Length: 429
Image (cartoon, one colour):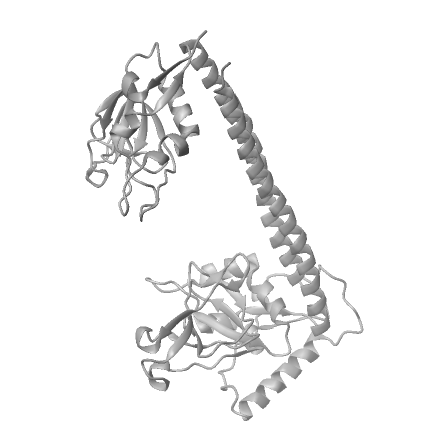
């Protein structure tokens, strides 16, 4: 059985969608838009099987790109920035086959035909010029069946890989929970008890207050038995987070500097919350910054966001810079005689995240108050055990990272193999 090659314009009708997406009225009919999910409209303009192709770039700004094309059947409407392509004779060309072919080859057949500089678009006449291989209709149906079978197998693999990634996420949290409960490394009876460490920390804070290096803070409430969430080893002690940290100084940059002074500013979204590092600071003159730019950033201190949705944004400051300032949306602090990495992992735990989600207050920008942050109860191990815990966490997290990279690489290979298999299904002798 021979294959034919025809242009889309020869075998299909092309019609631009005729409803402005923002003007659509919710109704019973699917409305095809750029996104994957359908909107709805109270009228339908097509009653057929069709391929729907965007007429504008997915990213704009001078870039040619197309995230997806669509297949739709039945009664539906189409946004006016998309083109509906309907086969003229369904005994010659299946809309599903056309969709499969174009979806697989959209980069070479569609994206490559986009035009324009600032506003990139795909002319309908260019879509009409696309040549497609057309096998006999029985072969088209067979190809569609092969595609469906391949995609079903691929979806099964992707589901399994997603499940593995979810298990890894839970494993990371279990590691942190074991760490906070004293179950990750064995206790050493020769370690100085945490109760003694806490007394030394209190003495050091009092010394810093006398030397006017930190401000005297209001007393924190005693820990009530009902506040304690889980058991910890005998040589550990529960305390309040505010008892064991010192905060950075705040600087009124608009008073202390001239408007032209350049500031290395770290805003609330500047943290890479996958690797827990500061991506980069914004170099701006004081005159362009708001009154929120006040926290002085110091090497070795922890930078932690108190604002939702950035509660996972945390970094230990690696290097100081000139006029290094962070937003007041951060707590900037360092542990006193406490391993800052242990504090970091404490704040990354699900125990803390869930606790803070309950404590968020405020309407426009829900956040954790400093009083709530200071009052967070903290499982304090002996100092040497903190170091052992951090070392073990980092060893285990490295293994988790390697497993995650392997799974993600497998996901990439799975996708690439699917594309190869689909393309082979379209080959003919």
